[in-house]
Length: 279
Image (cartoon, rainbow, N blue to C red; front, side):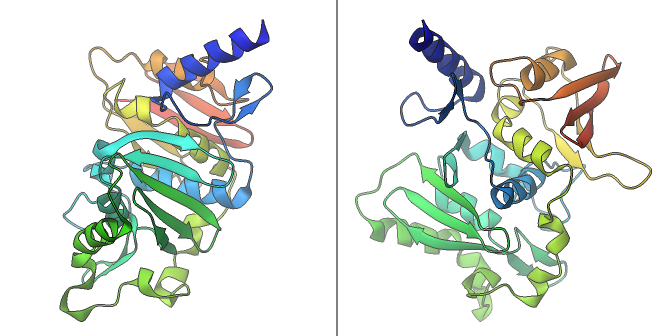
C-alpha cells in the first residue's frame, strides 16, 4: 500500500536525520525531498556546510581566530530540514546561532562568519536570514516560542552585542554587500562539489549525534581532492557513515562510493567527489 510505504519511509528518514515528528516534509514520488534544486540555495548550503564542518584542528578560514564560534554551533542544533523556499534549522538558541554565522570584521584577522548573510526579519520563534549573493534563505527556528517579537528582538540584540562594541558597524547592518565581503566570492561560487556539500549538510545531524563524530571539510587543491575527515571512535564503523549516505532511506540520490581502505574511499555525487577519511 503506497500510503503505508510513504509513512514507513518518512518515519525512517525522520529517525535517521532527527527531523521533527510534526510539520510538513516535502515528498517526491513516495520519498521525502531532502535537498533543494535551486542553484543559489545549494551554493549557500554548500558554504554553510563547510563553515559548520570544521573543528579545532581544521578551523574554517572564516572562523574567528582563537575561538570556536562556528565550530561550536552543532551543539545547539536539533534538526536540519528542507522546505520549498528555504532551509530550516531547529535550535535551542536561534539568536546565538545567528550571531555566530553573521559576518563580523575581526581587527586582526579580517572577515569572519558568512559573508553576505543578512537578517531580514524576526518573529516570536524565528530568525530569518538571507544570503544576498546567492539568494539562499535560512530560518533559525527556536525551540521556545516567546510571548512576543519584542523578546526575540531583545535576545537578538544581546547575542549580537559583541558585533557592535566600540561603535562598530557590522557588515550585516549594511543594505548591500561590502567590498570586504565581495572579496570572498569564491566561497559561494557554484562548483562541481556544491551539490555534494549541500546534500551532506542535510545529513549532518547523525554525523554529529548518532555517530558522535567531530568532522571537518578540508577543501582540496589541484593535487589533492576535497576531504571530509573525522577521528574514528571504537564504536563508529566507517561503513555506517557510508551506509547512511549511499544506502539508507536518507541516502543522497545518485551517490556512489568507492572504497580504498576500510577507513577511506571516494564519495561521488554528480561530477563532484570527496574523500571520506576516518583517522
